[in-house]
Length: 225
Image 1 (cartoon, rainbow, N blue to C red):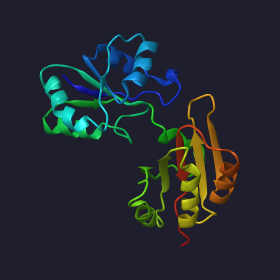
Image 2 (cartoon, rainbow, N blue to C red):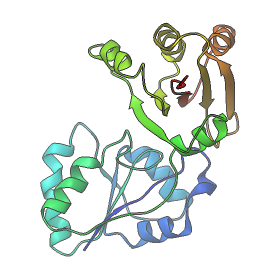
Image 3 (cartoon, rainbow, N blue to C red):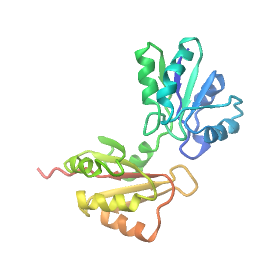
């Protein structure tokens, strides 16, 4: 009779918590962004429940039905492909609807890419802002322009296919001397973090094609006063 938000590993399956496995085993319904990927995780932990599809293309039409299941006494667990649901993944709409309907929601602590990336960056992590994926086209430049005076460390997610272009745009907006850290494949075999100025990191990725899941950490604007 509750919605559980269940973080899943961003790469290494050993990062799954004991409690997360327990909740998935006990859940009446498991919602998954991609049933194939979640199915691999469930098989790894011998969880027989077949996951139901819940993603950005069907969440609006399914949300009310799911809340109805919980209100009727079912326990529902929501898992994304990797990391914590709701953080650049479906989840917010369902959580908001549950709260509005008086349905209990509990988010388990667990994996998310942004925290290890910022801690590993060497850039200030006491105050930061998470920007997720920037708009690909419309609104992208306006968004970056609004961040020019941001003094907190900034966190972005990006596709490997757009990483170099994104870094070049950052250099145009923030200046080539702004410090940056790019982490890829966190917790996986080929995990790598490249640190330096934007000019240095751009030069690196012009000769080494970025691959895998990318997290970009950009130092905030330094206050000269």
